[in-house]
Image (cartoon, rainbow, N blue to C red):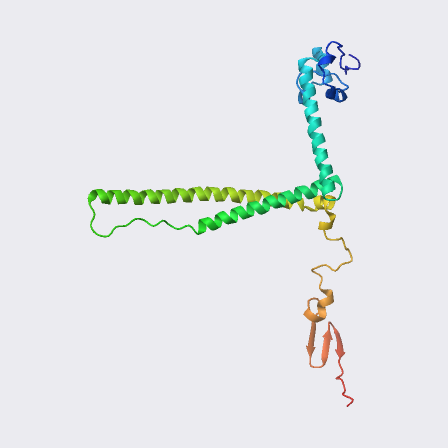
Length: 247
């Protein structure tokens, strides 16, 4: 070991067990037991005098499989980003944003539709007609009728409970996708991926709560009153001459 960071030992007898697609991904540092996420620190390796896994051994190959699987996943993810950029005629970043936003919008629409349909179904459901018989009944027939009525009511109540549970679950999905959709329109995310969705920054534009140009119409900021032919503009008196008809 040198500088507390040994390199992977080369065992020529074991290289024949190493798949070719692992070779470009072999790390510079030696590989120890524990997996990719549980590699020991150099201090612990030095204190315990641990030996690295031999190249081509079962433990070494298992570690390299973790590295390769992660690399493969990231490559597939990057390829999907590139495809999204091509589909939306933009960069991979914005293409991924547009694709995911479209998917979330569709999921939200479906969740909202399913919830509304179930709500309509429940609201239109009525208590089932209970069997009735006019005239006197034998005791056995009366008990059968009561049993049938009780069974229908139990089935109706159970169906109500099931529908309420289903409706609650559907509504929870509406909330989930609604929150997810709102996240895509947060200012920081939209500015990065969808600047066209944000209104242009116009510092010279009149604020919505500034009605200075409407004073003469609404009288919001200046105390103006008109009495006869005299305007009182604040503390200044202005007399208005009547227009003379030349005809």
